[in-house]
Image 1 (tube, rainbow, N blue to C red):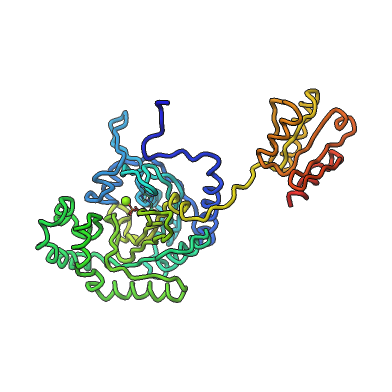
Image 2 (cartoon, rainbow, N blue to C red):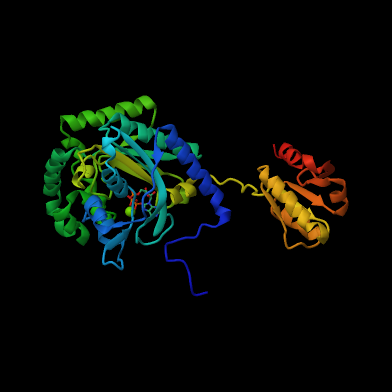
Length: 418
Ligand code: ATP
Ligand code: MG
């Protein structure tokens, strides 16, 4: 067949979907327990939104965005992440005038034209949260604790939580000078991207995956040595709170992450299971206190994180696939097919998941399909049963069969299903 899905984009077929549902509903209920409410944003945004928020000299904006011109000559981009849209919506709907602190969560597909690999796709799903209006550090600790608890509730036991502080604007400026002084003698040894980054955004050199750059970055001065008193108090508060909540974490002074907009708190959760391979970052997040203001909104502190759902699914222990059929209805003769359809409707109205083979077929072939679908119960209806107002109820697990009044069919099925 010549038509195939776009490289790096996957179909998720029904056999896989129950894992997705489980993950998404676990995330929703966890987020709602913490006071977050769902928001949904367009998948397509003006290109300028991402250029201005994520930053011009980032991998995402330089080489990963799906950008196109629409028929009205507007430059649009498939969203590569969710925070920019959340900030745009927060400003556009004047949300800060309605409540001092805003807590949103979202779930949806993101698009980045990266080299596809295990755990790395061009369309992938993220679930994330954003908090506007709270400068932290206690809310920073609370969302880290929340997400660590969430991941462990999925049965993913081995994770590592990394935290760092990037300081505020003044700290970043001082640190950038120190970093440049350190990097300058190595300039010619750095990859060409990093040589450019030195001029555009030196912090990003610390995030480079080229081995020689990473080795040089390993010995760079740490930003933690440059925090001013307020930054330091913020970072201490975060750690005190994490410790009090019992969330294990490790301070990683070289953590910078790929987006330009972060300040102060930065964190990442890494999975340690082998299933993940090289793509072991389950989620990343941080504080972006300047972004709302820089996109034209009122100065508003903010923090958030985003998790990759495919990577969480890879790290989750597998569970046996549950059946999606409670009752399979069998029409013993062609003459009762209409009556069998009515019985099906009645059981569905009672809340049961009902299947049947509307094409008809022999009794045996219908029962084979019931087995194949792992239905727990088969209800057989023949001419005699219709006349007597009964059905034959087969418990396909216990291998028993009973004749029961049709009026009791739904109740009996529910008792068996528990
Ligand atoms: P990485 O270092 O793996 O490229 P990132 O720093 O680009 O990650 P973020 O932009 O912080 O990732 O996105 C948050 C999370 O989204 C990541 O931790 C990861 O779980 C997931 N993610 C990011 N890019 C992809 C992708 N191309 N395919 C699948 N999941 C992804
Ligand atoms: Mg990336």
